[in-house]
Length: 188
Image (cartoon, rainbow, N blue to C red; front, side, top):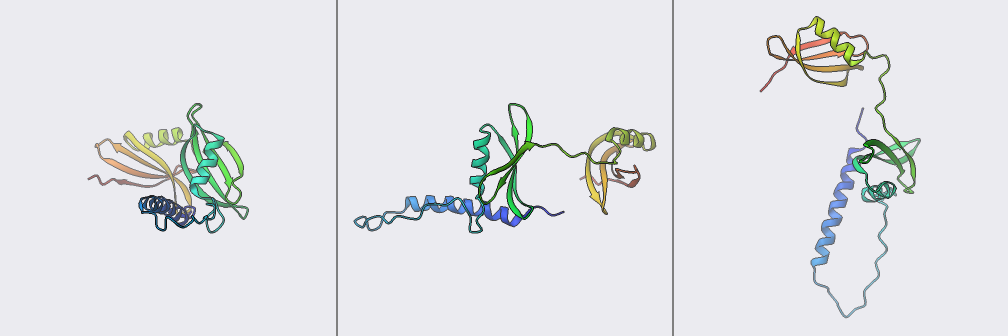
């Protein structure tokens, strides 16, 4: 699984910082030809060369819909052949995590809905998995667990301390409960 267009996100940030820097430099330069009438420049557009919204405009559109939001992440994606910007955010009043989808060409909000982590089907619940493993392996303390994918299957990575007070890293198949590996963890 690849991250959604990291080069495009980087170019948005780079363009934004370059525009801000060049604007501040232009403001400090002395005016030349003060006696000539000022030429009107074309109005600033909110679109990039590829006709998509700039990051600042996307954030502005999202903040107009929910002024008190705290933005967690923004990224671009293609949905049904259409370029969209997605904004993950939290509403501080309700502590609700939401995701907003904005059309990259028009700036129209397509969807704004509550976000919930999708449940993994056919996987053993974490509590059940840990109780089974504690009975087979002598785990004295669970430090951290996380989901990942290895060799095309969903796995749970568990970092724990054994009865000898040594940290270990265990990889378990989330569907079958099979321990794929259990190795001592190098600590430095």
